[in-house]
Amino acid sequence: MQANWMDIRHDFPILSRTVRDGRPLVYLDNAATTQKPNQVVDTITDYYRHHNANTHRAVYALAEESTELYESARDKVAGFINASDRSEIVFVRGTTEAINMVAYAWGRANVGKGDVVVTTEYEHHSNIVPWQLLTQEKGASLRYIPMDDEGYLMLDALDDILAEGRTKMVAFSMMSNVLGTITDVEHITSRCRRAGVTTLVDGAQAVPHMRVDVESLGCDFFAFSGHKMMGPTGVGVLWARKPMLEKMRPFHGGGDMIREVHKYESTWNDLPYKFEAGTPNIADVVGLGAAVDYLKHIGMGNVRRHERELTAYALARMADVPGLTLYGPRDPDRRGGVISFNFADVHPHDVAQIMDEDGVAIRSGHHCAQVLMERLDVAATSRASFYVYNTKEEVDVLVGALRKVARVFKLE
Ligand SMILES: Cc1ncc(COP(=O)(O)O)c(C=O)c1O
View 1: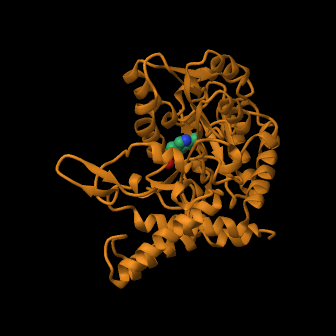
View 2: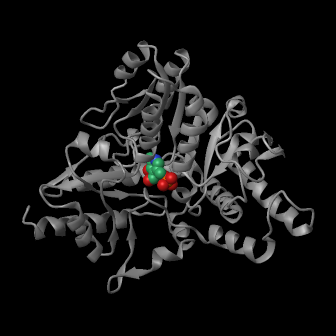
View 3: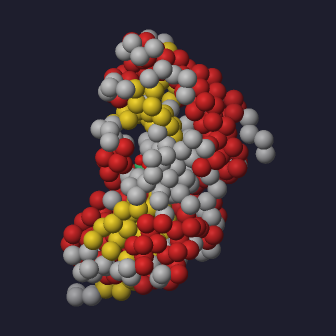
């Protein structure tokens, strides 16, 4: 299907609103969260209006409908990332919860004193802090794959770490939320498999923007969030191969995750319910299913092509803005639609505030990546991030607003 970008925008009423005294909104903070199309909002509303009941627990009609909607979202997600079995899809609150679940339920049973957990210099805090907690508790150590000046991982360092023979886990993101760098996942997973090392891929910035096939990536765990792919907040996914999930102890204890409970012991429900304790976030899971339908209708190849084109156009135009430093890879084939930048000594919050006067919503700060900020030797950056509904005209507005910042701070 050839996607029609203007038609897509009609599905997002928020994109037609104005801000700050009538300026058209130019929403460029998609790496933080994306907007939601009518199809997702309507699905959630329809669920509450017509089907709301608790899942898996009752035999009446509404409960059956609710369970059916919830479980069919699992099928949609499994198909979307090419999981070989629907029971490998565990619904969680988001990427953060998924990684914490692995660090607790897998990590506490498999990482011990003297062991090594490896991550990278361009991770989000959610793929650093859970490993710090684990390694500190266990007397293990946390090591980093370094990054070069263009924002690529220096993967030879991984070979050296693996050769020491103490590594238990390598956890890394498929795409940096600050630099847009796309990680060569198979390069890492193939080396780890050979060394008998478990891998976790943080797919928060990848699943919304490119085709992801968990089978061919060769990782053991894969995590992502619904709200960055047009779905609602508060829902995400942990994928892992069935034997891996079967071996793991539960993360949360409570209703639905058990088979039998006695005074002093319990047995666990089948997968994936062993990891879905308590009443799930039913309406938002159903909404995530609608987001998957929406993205599939556009086609992930079209999403990637559009963002690649927009990023190449933006990088070329931004290169001419006086005083602007751009971070991350120059090659649009090796990066996604996330562009971080700084103006000499101007604080990124001041940049974002001036852009906001023109209706341009960008992010400024450390983007939950302070280790990366240290590596770049900056306190913060400004960041523009695109999605499938953004246009070249919006990039032009962005560049115009950047030129205004350059004028205000006399950088021309
Ligand atoms: C690469 C990456 N990992 C993890 C997260 C955390 O996602 P969430 O806050 O949805 O759990 C984000 C969010 O910005 C991210 O960009």
